[in-house]
Length: 303
Image (cartoon, rainbow, N blue to C red; front, side, top):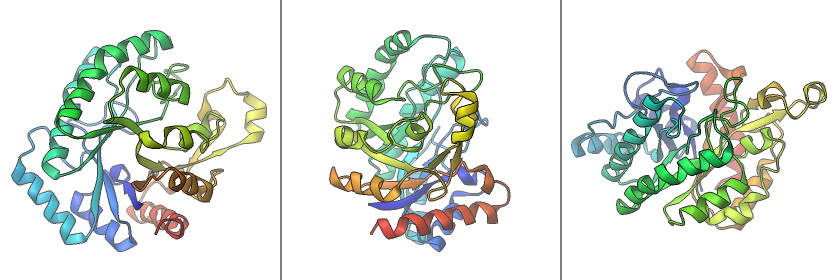
């Protein structure tokens, strides 16, 4: 396995600065965010460390040279917009941008692109699934033809204005099973993040056994469920009203068991720390501290 982090934490730094920090702390790789120009289209979105809109082979060679300079690889290109959005402009922009991210991955000599399936929060599950079967087969075929694997993160994107359907269909094992039956391509899989299962009061480790062959990339983000608050608001409240995103080691996930389960199914890919811990927001130094703590927790588990 390779230990890395998600570049979204450093939206105010250049790619070279991100790679330098990764090297200095001892990370092997970085998942590089590739949102289009123009800023965020949702919470936690909008970071662009590589602009793929008109990405040339010369630009790709420059990026690869930076990686060689610092001895840090790129685990995947990440773009997490909402292709099934209720906002038609947002949906169209996402569907048009994903192939550009795929093309950039080819030029960079990468295997993986990570994204969301998306969802329309105003529609029930079955309507969202129908939209998925209309939109995603062509995107997966495009990736398949380019020999790129698409890893879908299992974040439900549940906020006050998106409850209960969220902004990402791929939120549970039952839905993953249906997704992979509908699109059986070997290039279609998961960017597996255990925190989103923990947040939903589910076992974050058990699905690895069934879906191991579909796990192309992983995020290491912890989650702490506040049991006192759960007793107050109940399981039907917004998940983040009773849970808090934490860096690895400061939440409820057993990282030794999680890594062990991944090794049991033969996973040997990236494990990328995703920092959304509000205790470590603010200065670059504070964010770097979050990555150093996460590195100290996970490195002993990852050779």
